[in-house]
Length: 284
Image (tube, rainbow, N blue to C red; front, side, top):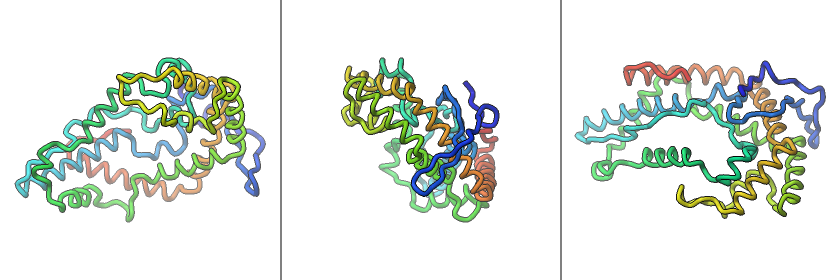
């Protein structure tokens, strides 16, 4: 399901109160598909494809600089295929995928393990960089050329920082707190599970997997399945996503000038990268 805020969300007519703070009316929606969910700050975030493109340009500049010093350097030569979804919210407010939980618990799927392994290999430095390290000036020179013309103190993570602020407010919102309380009661009845919230349940150290050849235990699958069932039963993810969208929109409205300046600088960086690599960058 494609979820578009402007078209499908209805604004409720009441607000909630937390302490002395009047919480904004929540956007009301049910049956959210977190795999396709898009929140108001998401379009501003540098997408995986854009990040990959910028990284390739920076690597090309660094490699060229190293060659001037007689160092044969190559890093991240194969970055693989970038995620086509700019920002993912899968299980951001806990798991709702019961079939997956029954089969894998909280572990990655086999397909996800392939991507995890690819990223691990990508982030490893080649042996020749250990033998012939690049001059310290080269990374700085590469960044200076790549970010030439951007706003002072440009922070590529700025939209993500705002997103974290919205998420923090979401978890503290009384409507979400009430849903977490209902989730805890459901988990207790389901199997005597006593986790404080879905995030803690998924992050239990007992679930740490050593890789694709170490499948989830039956207890992990039981907890994960109850987690997904209870999340859907009490409407935790639906409520949290709606509340989070509201706080996202508040931050977009509050920071429009800064976000517009960020967008201009991001366009400059992508333009610089395109000139460096000699090809157009991604559209998202």
